[in-house]
Structure formats: structure tokens, C-alpha cells
Amino acid sequence: MATKDIDWGSLGFGYVQTDFSYVSNYKDGKWDEGSLTADHNITLSECAGVLQYAQTVFEGLKAYTTEDGKIVTFRPDLNAQRLNDSAARLEIPTLPEGRFIEAVEKVVKANADWVPPYGSGATLYIRPYIFGFNPVIGVKPADEYQFRILCTPVGPYFKGGAKPITIKVSDFDRAAPHGTGHIKAGLNYAMSLHPIVTAHKEGFDENMYLDAGSRTYVEETGGANFLFVTKEGKVVTPKSNSILPSITRRSLMYVAKEILGLEAEEREIRFDEVKDFAECGLCGTAAVISPVGCINDHGKEIKFPSGMEEMGPTTKKLYETLTGIQMGRIEAPKGWIHVIK
Ligand SMILES: *Cc1c(COP(=O)(O)O)cnc(C)c1O
Image (tube, rainbow, N blue to C red; front, side, top):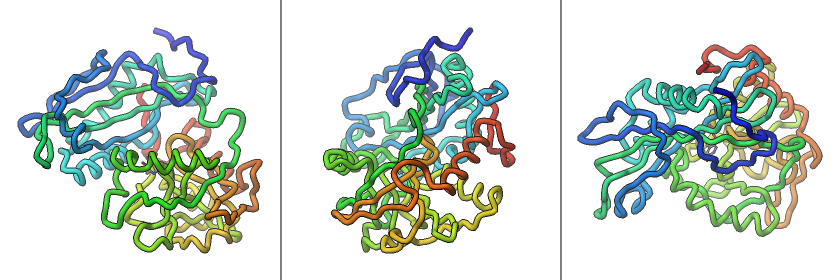
């Protein structure tokens, strides 16, 4: 077997079918053993719970090749925990302990030829998800579920350098207080589609959502958490019960404190403080950090001193340290790198 003949550098972020997916079914109150499948289509009832009432949760992580040639994933135990937290909130059965990691290992090993080489900037994106399978028409949870993992190779997030983006303060809300903002549910993305299409039409790259209750505090974007750097060099990130606990953000906060020796704090951040920050970035698995150069609040622009040409200096240090850890160039904290092969 050999790595697929693909121009990894020019791959985008789109679905490319690989050789295998992983599938496990839940029926009569338990999960089956699970197995690999080469069938990338799903046949299900027109009345399936997922189609009628959006009963589905997902995860996203990457497999990639490190400097010394190993295929690894980054902190998959946190994805396993978070998938179960998401499932519980939507009355979806959780996965038995160890099953998630075992399934990720199996499906990545089976698709090893699709894991891009070190230095290409590309990765094998892994998308685990669970959805309501059997017919449901009265509003209630399904009785049968499918857990599936699909893999698809994705290109480097930044082609030709990470240019800062411009975002707008959205007039829409992402998540209600005590709602589902803290879980990775498809429904959160369905309702973000109109706001993001609207933002793009207006020339912005992303939306900044404020807390739906008071429109006073910064929450997150449609799919990434915020990190800010104060003028004193302190790293701060919004604390809220309605934002998704990003694994990248949690890792960056650890890197800031424990490796770079910076002050780092998770706290409520008022939108009116944002104009005083020195740097701003968005964090998530896809890009690690996307620098933000400008925030547009209904025509009023907040321009960060780091500018529109490159990442701010602290953001850059955080980015380089975490990507260095992920790629095996910098020693990783215990348990962060999960070797698959
Ligand atoms: C997945 C996701 C993130 C990023 O989380 P990571 O674990 O860092 O990939 C941030 N916000 C939302 C809403 C998400 O769904």
C-alpha cells in the first residue's frame, strides 16, 4: 500500500470519498460490535428521527503524519467525552467507554493511504456522528441509532499564509441561554446557515455572536471560539454556558499558561472591552487559529493593532507552539498525541 497520488497542497475542504467508513448500530437498548464498511451510502426510512427532528450530534478531529512519520490524532479522548455530552443532551444513547477511540483507530488504519504526508499541510479529517435511525413522527427520541465515522482528506487551511479576516457582529443569535450552544449538534449549524450566508453577501468572513440573553457578552462564531490578547499580553477567552467547549481553545489556554508562561484567563468578556484588546483569533480544529484583523459592529470598525497583514505576535506564538506539538516538533504534554500507526 502507498499513499494516494493526490496533490495534497491544492486540496480544499470538500468531501472526497475514502476507502472505508466505520459503522455501528444501536437497537434494543444496546450498541452492536461495529465494523468497517466500504459502503458510503446510508439507506434509511423517509421518517427517520434525524430527518424529521434533527436528532444528530457530531465530532471533528484530524489524523495526520508527524515529523517522524507516525500517523496520529490529537486528544481524541476529549472528542469521545464531548460526543457523549452532546448525545446525552439530545436523548441519544452514549457510546461505551473506549468504543470511540477504538473506532477512530480502526477507520484511520484502514484509510492510512489517505493520510497526507508530513509537511503537506493537509490532513485526514475524521467526522464521527450519531443519528436517530428509525421512523419517528410523534415528537420523541428514536429507538434506533447509527454511529458512523467518515474520513475525508482536506487541504491546508491557509494557502499562502494566514491572513487576518474581518468579521461582523451578528444580529442573529447562535444559542439560547440553557439551550444547546454547548453541544456539537447539527441543529446549531442549520440555524447558522442564514446568518453566515448573509454575512458573506455583505463581505464579511464570519459572524461574532453575542450572548442571546443580554447582547452584552462575546460568545463565539458559528464554528470557532474566540481568543483575545490584552495590551498587557494576557490571553483571555470568553466563559459562557452556551459556547461549544473547543478542544483547540482548551489546549491553547494550557499552552499559554504552562508552556509560554503567559497569563491566561477564561472569563466573561463584555463586547465593549473588545476595542481595547491587542489581538484576536478564532480557534478550532480546522485552522487551529485564524487571526481576526477587524470586527465590524454595525458600521463601526474595531481594528486590532496587529493589522490585516499577519497574525499578532502572541497569537503567532500560540499557533506555532500548538502546531509544533501536534506535528511532533515540540514535546507534547502527556496524553495529547494519540499514535495510531
Ligand atoms: C467544533 C466547534 C468549535 C471548535 O472546537 P474544536 O474542538 O477546537 O474543533 C467551536 N465552536 C463550535 C460551535 C463548534 O461546533
